[in-house]
Length: 283
Image (cartoon, rainbow, N blue to C red; front, side, top):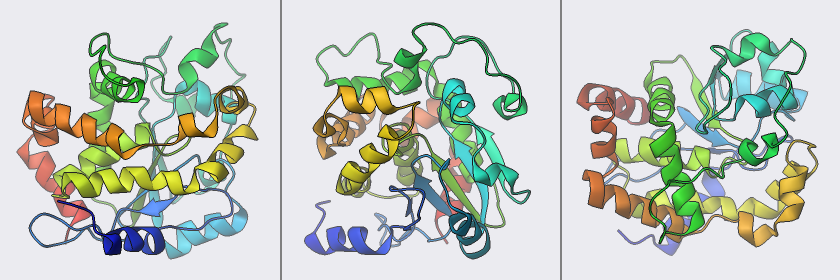
């Protein structure tokens, strides 16, 4: 399915949630499905880091958007270094943590140790704090594609766990996020939209939409000591998501697993759970 200019205009203007403390928050509602339907607004959102939300942002998310769950895909180091975000003080909002990167050590509940002293981190901690993990194979693929395949190869259980969290019944909205809301979030969202019946090219278009805010996004992350070095070490173009990256990942899933749903079924997220996630994103 080819994305029309009208669809692109709708993506640009209707789905962004403009907040003081984020630059890449948008609703997954309003996307067309292959059977002529569409995804439902107000159910699942995708976003960049939520650490810098303003008081007004929190009120808007909790009272107007009715946010009730946060699915955090960052590493343990990111969570601890960034500290407690403002939504952590809101009792109505449940937080869940599923890192997509291999990590040293083990935390059964990262949020339970937030108040403790920062653990001693290995000297090369910065190398694993952002999504650079790649598969050992697929040497001919672009680095970003190998990185995304790395999430699926090294942390498939957390990809599945994140989708189960999105599928669970909720009396309100769920937001899934990482640091920038484009790589780790992009992969989990791609699977969720595929389950909902959104065609590949619409999934690709949603993924690439982050390019429209990439300058502000990089500037925001560069202001955090956690991410500053990585932001200044590479130019903005290298951080910009490209449609061909997600298109290639979906092609490889089609070739190797019969599509995203095939990969999910192989990893224990079968038809019943897929139906629950589909119902969450559809009427």
